Length: 358
Image 1 (spheres, rainbow, N blue to C red):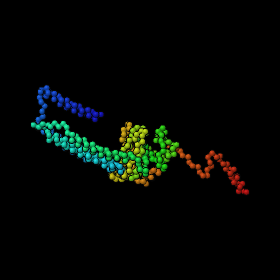
Image 2 (cartoon, helix red, strand yellow):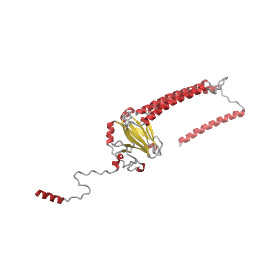
Image 3 (tube, rainbow, N blue to C red):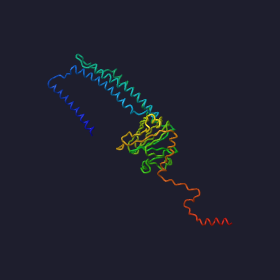
Image 4 (cartoon, rainbow, N blue to C red):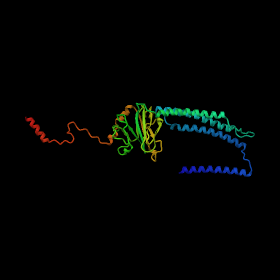
């Protein structure tokens, strides 16, 4: 509330200043006086512009200096390195254009300040200049867009055959993770079968492939370092987003539509803890799409580990079906068949004795 009041006060101050300036102009017009600016004031304003330019450049440097420790560490995926390269080239190209135009803007404002006897040149049009400053930016943008499309198509294309498949389903307000069982195939699902008590993804139990699927409801993803992983992304209710900032990956989770992306992790969780100097570091998955009042609390984690560590973890997980359905125990070899009448122990003993006598 205090921030809103402060903003309103600042706006009101600017309105008052503007109205005072306008009133001053009207007074001069009524008096028939020509509005002029003294040489001293004009020169002072020209120097002020230069000072503003250098202060702005210094501010950019200081901002970068103080915020650099908060930047994300190096990309934890191979594909993320390509995105970082693309971003760096974009910053370099646009940075040259920005600093160059700002330098000329402030310098020309200083050099060509108003002086007695100086008249501005009316320069209406120049076809050659128009062609140059339209063609060069257009070609530059075409190159940057082409690189971006190449990286995007690579991320969303068909994943390699050996990829580990992981389904991520967003719901208000957590991520549900599913791994295929030993058959390597995801079982069929039907949204009409969804039940938060014992079938959070609506698995169709008539499909044999669904009975060995593993579901993790706490949003924790385990993947193998340096092995391709494909994410199959869905939403159970509203629009969510699977954001993997440390891997430089991001994809919407859309209700009724399956989206995918694949990547190759290159830095394990243990190694990233060494790089960051944070023994408690974990790769986070924030939901990057406003999805309701609990959006702020919706997140998951990614554990990047060795193949042996992953297989050990996976072996400790139970199939979702067996966790929510009783499985009948197999009968013992010497047990009577189900439904058989209990034997008369006395009769059995008598028969045995008779046989022994004979």
